[in-house]
Image (cartoon, rainbow, N blue to C red; front, side):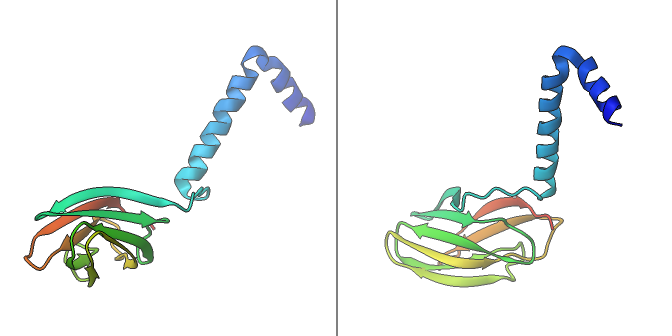
Length: 140
């Protein structure tokens, strides 16, 4: 077997290193896609800001978003108020947060066990104005 591998290696010639590079990239991408290789910087993922009436709201998460678990989340508001945060389409998993003016608050966001629909996080104020963030489709 060793002779066969050495014969193959010597017969490739000029293309041996580009081929090995392509094989290594394919292995890396397949392991990353399967979730075996998870390189996390530990930082916050910024999902953007939305305007809720006249209030600017920013939403961030940290870590992997997996169905049926809870994730670290952070919200910032430019004005004071009480906000209802929900993490599914029906609003079943919801809780309220009170924020002061220009305050940022960290919390645990429970993620529903839905894997066929995208995860939508919505924030509602007292006047029933709503903004939402589509965090994408979840996988197990």
